[in-house]
Length: 70
Image 1 (cartoon, rainbow, N blue to C red):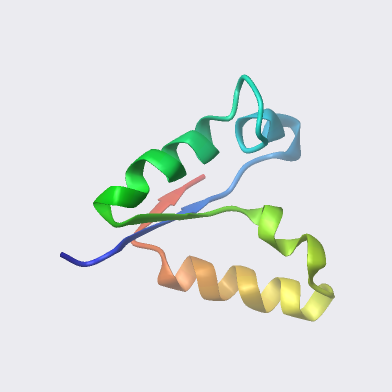
Image 2 (image 1 turned 180 degrees about the vertical axis):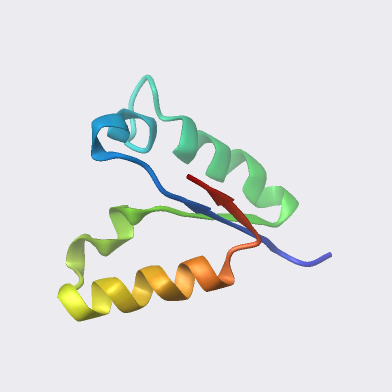
């Protein structure tokens, strides 16, 4: 079975859905679907990257995604 890659894009107004806490839907989905070979990507991973790497990483992850959530 091939890995399903999900790219999640969201407004920072809605960041409660990607942060750990009572509304952490995206992290919960990522943990629970990992066993089914589903990988989620969302921007907390970008905090340590400089500007150009930031853009390059986003493009790479969008291109890799099987599913897009905007």
